Length: 192
Image (tube, rainbow, N blue to C red; front, top):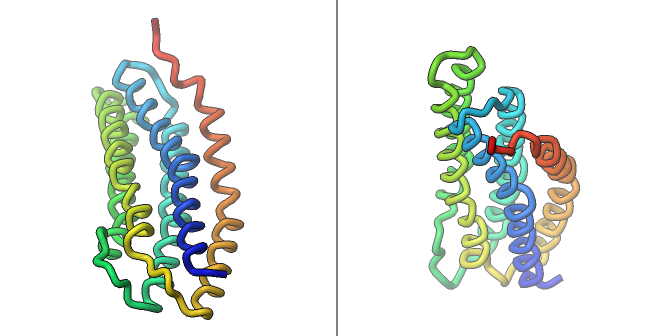
């Protein structure tokens, strides 16, 4: 299997995950945040479930791809300068986890019915989801500009197996996100 095919396949997988998993999840969290700032109640459990899914995305899908980037990039020198250093992508889950912790801090006040925390939670939920969306395109940029297309046969075999395994292992997460989006639709209706 040519390395060019693998790079194209990974780019497609990254785009699909972003468009079908992460972006819908983060957009839903933003909308829940906006509803909170409009004074609507959103059960804290609904917000926590969304944060758990976001965290799972960071630890499952994102980490898997960083491992694939390392595997591909370590095998050969890339003739062009990378637009995004791998170190930036490797630290992205930590930024996401920090965002989730900040949201959870506000969610604890909201859950305890502390005055003003509904608005604070709404603002931070909307803002942090927006910030995460801004970072997510970097994986695709890295795949476009930094992955060599002249991999050794051994690396091609290892990378093919890693792509197949990650696709299979992440199917449950993809389904959980789809279910979450369906179940949380009733919380998106703003009052007339």
